[in-house]
Length: 180
Image (cartoon, rainbow, N blue to C red; front, side):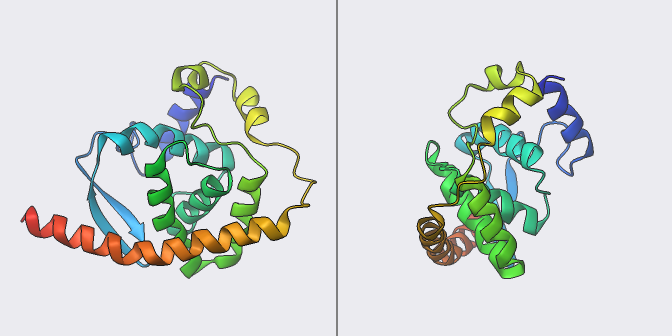
């Protein structure tokens, strides 16, 4: 099965519809215990197919905890190719840590042993077999020699996530004020 076909199946059962909410003008993002309205920027729209593919391949849900897990996984897998993903994932991570810190740690460490898809062109991903992309993403998980370094990285991301919550809250509040 091709990735494009699998993604269509994923969207058919997801709460976001057939396009992953790419075409919405306003989206709601998790930041700690809050859902914050944000403009759906073009930069975010470019990142969403990758993020959704990561949900599909990792098996993390679209719940608050699942968004935190995929955020932790993406941060662990070095998602710096698209800086917007770091900011969005910090919001998800802050939420995930409130509800299930242990699962966030597991997802982050899994990400440290994985590759994300942000560096690959979407058309190449879509026309590849699901098994090929899965083999690319998930590398040997038996080598945990850098566990302490990984935990230090996770602590750093968690600290940033805590700092990001007030920024995201103010952004959402200002956006709501301007548009009402």
